[in-house]
Image (cartoon, rainbow, N blue to C red; front, side, top):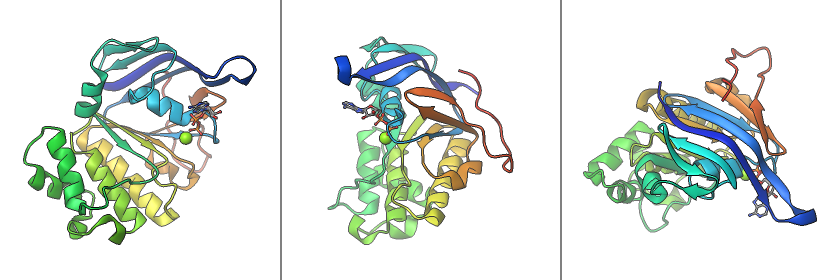
Length: 239
Ligand SMILES: Nc1ncnc2c1ncn2[C@@H]1O[C@H](COP(=O)(O)OP(=O)(O)O)[C@@H](O)[C@H]1O
Ligand SMILES: [Mg+2]
């Protein structure tokens, strides 16, 4: 399995002097295509900072990021067209679906398909909504959708460019446990069937068996998370 992204020795500090916060403290991580990984850890641990560094949203101060084996960021300096990489190969899902309120579900996905340059926007949008099991809601506007349905549409939108890496920052924080599990299982399906690497930040410890690998962060450091004994476990590989 090829690696979608590999980070080596990421460090990031916010602020200076006495108020400085080390958000990433020598973080190394490899995400393979076809796998779904969870990132656990308390608030303030550095999870969102890591997602932003891996997603070329806001770089770390030092360290390297390889995208599909190509060095693309070194010590905060881009070595490739990161905006293009993001648009062509990455998908993002956040806590809030942030759908465009004046477009229906299908149109929300369709504009992303057209923006990503994959063509056949309408047919592709319908296919993706079907894949996320919300085809029946394609004509509905966001305010008419439940939170879980909105997140499925947001995931469909994130798949528009057929990404090799999907980054999801607390995508189920606003959902109840049943809907949360369904969304987590959809991420697993996307990773396994479409060959993407998927990294999901989550606080929900009830659906952990959905994931192939588990990490946790604390005070800017990352380590493999050891599952409770009852669940089948494969520890995260070392970076
Ligand atoms: N833009 C910022 N400016 C200053 N400090 C920040 C900023 N973003 C995050 N931090 C701090 O960095 C640490 C890690 O934050 P974050 O990555 O958002 O953690 P998490 O997502 O795990 O809750 C926290 O102490 C947070 O307060
Ligand atoms: Mg966060």
